Image 1 (cartoon, one colour):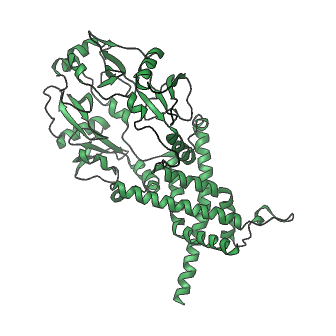
Image 2: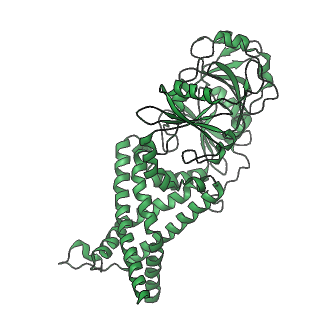
Image 3: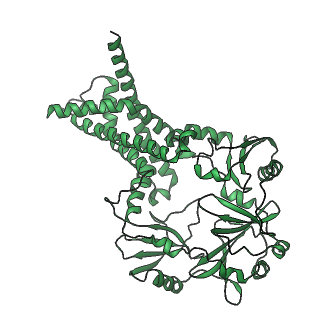
Length: 492
């Protein structure tokens, strides 16, 4: 038994030596991430920068072609109405809405004009990017190259990235956000450009580092309990540790109290880049019910109406910034966005006219659910408060009240529906729930009880991370000293 105990302790000492620096980096960068993440161009600012589509525009705009496949959006680039046809995550084709011909690539002068209009500052330099850089390290942006990188002459030292192919503002960074990312997101997420652009390799590196970290934590927790000793009455509370040397003692003590958090933190980091294995939490459905609910666009029914008729149907003809073609519950629909980029007005292209519809009622939701989920029993409820699965989000509208559908299937599937659009906002099966708890709950304390009091969530994260940092920092000191001793012995 003693041999096994000594083996585990030595194993932790050895493995911890190789990863202690990474642990320190993860916790230090985690402090920054609590307050500032990786820079992104504001979706709201980009949307509000769009020019309104006027009656004169609608008089000249042609219907989208039946050959257009994918998500169809109508908006303006400067003063020019265009159709954006999305294929995949970012890839898109852009067509002149007057002629239905592909738009030419944006010139440098046009990019400068767009950047200055967006930022209200002069462009002092433009760089044409043939490949992605540190602030756009995602390979799915490659189809939008070349990209104009515009350096703005403002107090924030803003840099704007504009695709020459689509005329879209893709990224916005400021000097303060770039430095925050260098100290936070980049080291924490291993977002080094040459590695992150190779998505498969990046995933493998992060997975292996996290898996190795989980192993180090497990051996550390076991070693910590092995080295415990019973404290006598006259001794202080720290004497449960047998170590006398400062760094050994406090690595043992802090590891005993914070080791479980360090373990859950590293484990949840691993879950963030992997899926929960099906042998642990199986997924039985061959197709996600949310995909069954949200239909693909059927453009044929839309083509019965001209853009002029779409304009005539608008009750409010001001501030129309974007229109999206949709098919919802077998109805040809138009999502009209005005001053809120998340919440549209919904118009139905009926047999005889285009009309604005109100929110979907219980009978309409049930009727479509009976068609889509005809092989399953389900319950439909109206939720009026956020919970651990349906939470307020800055990235997507999460309205209240909302509809919740619980399917009586093997996966216990649950869908949350937007009563305005009739589409699925979020969905969970048992596997999704397990991942949600193992990742978001453990890694960022993303629980509704804390989300209601953001200051408390951040305070708990800071305190827990501080404990993890002390464990890691003491481990790093011991590792450096161990390496020094071994190096000196080899010289002798």
